[in-house]
Length: 204
Length: 278
Image (tube, each protein chain N blue to C red):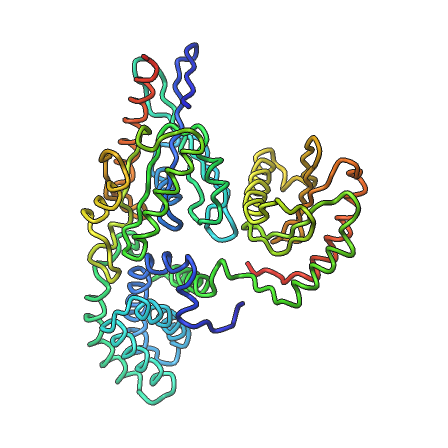
């Protein structure tokens, strides 16, 4: 549910980072928070446990310049990934305009990725939203583990897994949230298609 | 709990496995860097390496568990080699010089197995702070963050009994004791249709969120957290640092009386619940 303020010429959209526990959603936001110019950014809020597990959400508001005279504000949220926190995930998803699905490239997480994507579909469904209609970008995270001692799924397998659960293929971005490659590409892509879809809805 | 040696299987049963596996390259490279600097030190100042050896051993034990989980026998063998050499050094069976010579030759092989050195490490790995942090993290994961709290059956029984006899009263339909992360520890009450597990998770999230609000306006936390419904109301209160007591009561009960009751109960519960480590 984008918020459009015509008098202030401002469009505000909500982007949620979704994915299985420990896949790097918060790490994505932390990287953006570290690298982006503070001028275009609000304060990052994290509601987490004593450890570094997200308990409710992380929140990072950004300003992404102007489109047709409208200021674009994007609010980034993450959800808690652990299965236990499904109710909290539903709350964070309310009014979402675009989703980044962060998939974990580690082989041991193959099933967890699929479960989480299905869970996303179910939770959106409860809010009468359709995953296939929503702007979605899939980030293949932890690509930095490629070639290391940890077995990693190759991009084709992951694409096959994920696209098998979607009506149409969506942008797929390999990334390493810990080190940075792919993080801003993901943000750029999801912002682009989310704004596009809001603009499209606006004209209708 | 702390100090208790957990088996390999235990470590990898929880969600922590994902984290430990993801960090394995960093752990391995930290080990390798520490080993290199320890080798240098052994040559110059062989009596002063106790701490480095201790660090190396803790890192090795995690690598070993991970290798076993991955069923990577090659890595397992290499780690065993390092492990036995370190043990021999500690026991005085090997001289520092011998150790330097044998282990030095084993390093490239382990490097090959570890894969490319993570860029994010930079040169930090050699600072003592970084190593200590890595080890602390590893110990933390090994203990199992989600398994941090061990509540024995006796304590649980005791808490339940206490809640029923000393806190429960006419007008309260449910009392829950949960931890900060939303794990349900004890639940008493007669609200049958209640989905206590979800409620606990959401309540913890809500509690944490209001605490964040408090911080944003410069308060440590809100002392009283109370939600009034049409028929039933909610009351939240902290028990010590790590636990929260959630009470659901109907509107026939006065809030003041409930607060008094809970305040008394909280003091007692704090003594009975296991203390949490940081």
